[in-house]
Length: 247
Image (cartoon, rainbow, N blue to C red; front, side):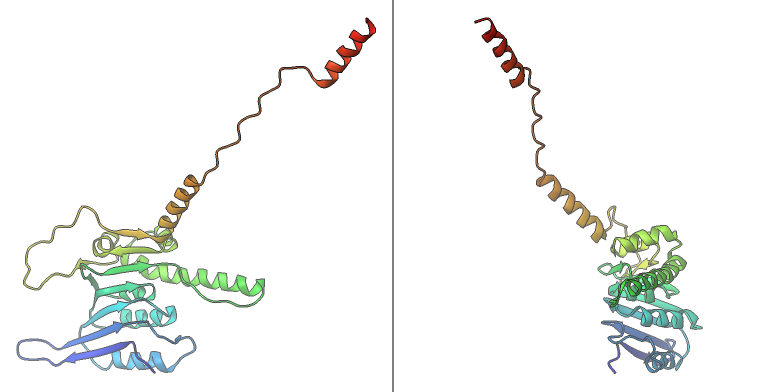
């Protein structure tokens, strides 16, 4: 089994308390945790093998939502403080795990992405409808985690997920997905928040592009057909016959 997590423990010293650090790198579970009793149990045993506060470093594009949900629950249930630090990317399922942090910090060059859950389905229309309903339920459960952390409305969160939204550190703090932006330990000055932060929506970009293409390729409507003001053929023929009668 290829593990996507790694623990680093530092024993307590006379000048520093014990530290527990968890690194989550790469795809969250290359194989699904659905109906898997071994992998989640191994993660839980390692999590509970020590005590005290934990720092979780995340750099992941996401992965299995079942694995993310179980890790989220384990971290939420952990007795100590959980500080999440996003140093690269926390996308998709990884963003769900990040919401378990007592405090969430993002590197000034990191990104966070949320979107709708996806799956692969096979079968008739009945099976397709079941898959649609399942995805709706999964989306609701993901929104629960985002709502608890951010305080945003479910409608707002659903819209952000529909649009596949990418956020830089400043926008993530603004929306409540993160609490602070990481700084150098020797930098005690307040960091000025830029006037413009980055929010990228894939759906908005596609819609904007399609509007531009439609405008560029628009075909001018056909000119209106002018109404005829002359006489019809039948009228001319009748007049001609009348003339012939007098010749």
